[in-house]
Image (cartoon, rainbow, N blue to C red; front, side, top):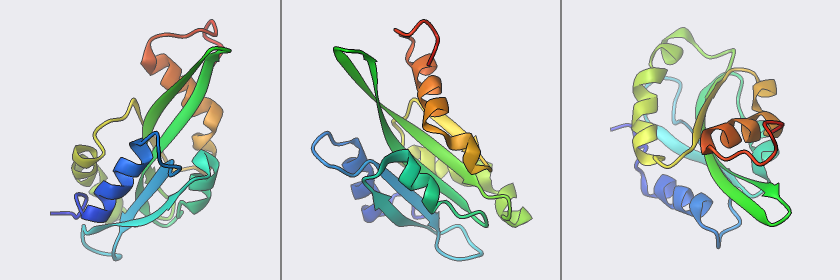
Length: 146
């Protein structure tokens, strides 16, 4: 097993999903340069911007983030995104296994509205992810203007 279901990962996942916990993201990395053992590398309360700063250009990492946005003055939505990060400096063999190993992560981090595959931090702007979440959510109260 990859370790995606380790107790500390499950606890961090529950924290990100909880309305009563300030934790709003988690980051899973590989324990070593070879092998498929996954470990919880970090959690945070600073949202997507803080998470993006933690991504490693030389690694594959899996992130789970809580995104809150307003539809209008009276309503706020909470959605979750799974980010599959493949840093541009990642070794070829690690990249080749992402589709297989991401499956184990998705079984554990199973409740998300969108999956974002990225290899460049510029692909992870909050505005772009909110736009994708709005589209995935069906209701768009901004006339499609994200």
